Length: 438
Image (tube, rainbow, N blue to C red):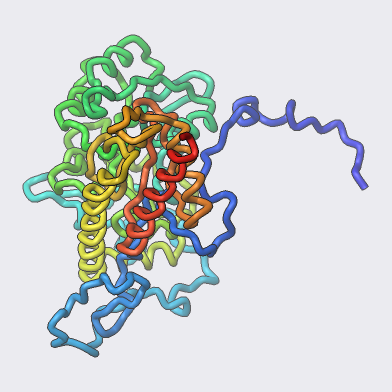
């Protein structure tokens, strides 16, 4: 029986939340564990960067592509380093580390040190645990940064579309304004530092600039000098966030991590969801000056790093785990190159946009084959995406409505069998679509 009450959610909830358009996924209509080829969220199709085996092999569903770390078989059957992920040893009945401390035996402290060691650049000032904040995925770091530096209803962030959607969602959740300076879509999705700096000079309420490099969905590595121009703004008092979720697919020297001890207002954001294949553990890593990291750590929840997350991330950063990551990354690059070679052979494919410093491609599709005068077409891209979801089912991400992405689908690199199926289904679907128009 419904109770009478004066409660009116439209007058009780915050107006910005009532108006919020949530971040959406292509997977909403599918139950967990369904037999679907997932090429929509830029995960690692080759599995986590953890060696769970004891014989140097990795029987984790990689369809025979995994190259054992001991190809000669000399150490077959030998006991190798094992990740400490036994539930009995994780003390799951206890809360994990509450807050970061100077206790060197703290598991989260040890994990932060591993991240520092992994990202340390020779010749740069050493990274320390005081430079690091660990969050529940990169999305929590975005939210924390906005909460720390932006006053609700007053301040703004600046983003550069086309870009990652959670910057905008987090700003709306926190009742923070958004200023947009589009990437130069006619120049390979290049950053426009002069336009950004002009906006910063004109509006001191802009407190955070989010720069995604390599870009999502563009896949391009932004010019280092362009990012430095923004950092060098002579009067603006704010934070520059360089989101490097895909940095492990770019040349090693591309990262800005080594610069966090140089620039007082720089935050570099990483994730374990892409190259490391650990999307399920939800772990983001932010590097910055200690004074920034301290504020971020003060805002995050007291138990935000679960014991399983810390244990699995530590295993991925072990010598065995890093070896697996490098091997899986090589396999992803191999299959990415196949997409770059084979998609252009399909009638109705237009071209690739952006660059390829990621584990996905941004592919443009036409309303009819190019030799018949085809042009980029959003309706074709959307229909192709819908057909793939029905036939495979194969999920890809429709980016056709984003700035400079007309007719585009963002396609995550899969394993060999997944790429084989994808190519067949794209060719067949486009052929049928074009015939239906005749």
